[in-house]
Image 1 (tube, rainbow, N blue to C red):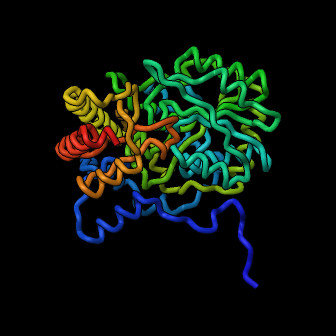
Image 2: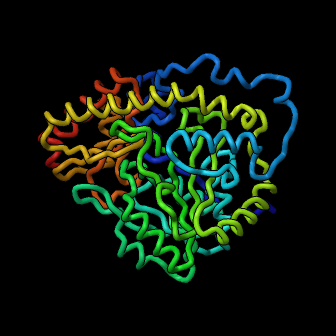
Length: 397
């Protein structure tokens, strides 16, 4: 008899049409312009030669298990955040192997099976999978677009049930690039406090505002009324996804935050998931990695400016406002099929973009593109996308 498997994991994962087409074209030797690339190590950035050289023999080989993370590493994160204007104590910081790992630890802390987590829609699809793996339930709340993206606060409140345990905010949102305003945060935090909910705020893209500034607005600029967990990490902060280190900051009412920290430390002690050599070198990575951060910031702003110039010649498409992050969203003003359009762009123009339904946009037609690719490739690919997507014969279909 064959063993049974958890219902949390799909029995079979079928590739979508876009992935199948991409695989087929790649195997045929076709060069594809990838406008979905989000890996900073793959887009021609120049990393300082000594950035990861710090991972060397010696002290790095000794094991230093500390459940919340090594004190020196947590102090390095606190110093980094303080340099960006955030008053965070090292004692409020927990180190994890990634933000995905952080989500899993927090879901274990807050939820029992069948409990509910409220997540924004649109948002990055990985959230739903992370939630399902913990045997809990993802419940969406809407982000509404007028002249800018804002949380549907009435809808958020209606989504709260007796099984709700936390609200997830992504600040700035991925992929809309919208920051949570101070007023929104205060109202959402008060709502969470009123209903006894925790607030999980993912700020991994927070240091990439489109406007000239060290960072965008953070929920840590306010004093949260509810128990709040703020996520960040090396992957986005300094463009080092391969080193697998992130952090959780615990904030909120002091007694509640202390209780949560004690329980979270017990969970972290069970896993001890962060590599000692990376922790020992964390201060170095956060310091020298600022050169990479600056390159990414310049790249994103340059590509966004290029996109705006090209969009100005295509009145049948609109570039939605972007406040921060690495992505942009294009909306076509006349009906079409996202599935059909993205497949045509890939198979005919050899450009890969993501359709809006990947992120649960409310309707068609939205295209999501990365602002990370090398500028000359980005410009060429965007021109191909808009020329095809805005063609009269296509828009009428």
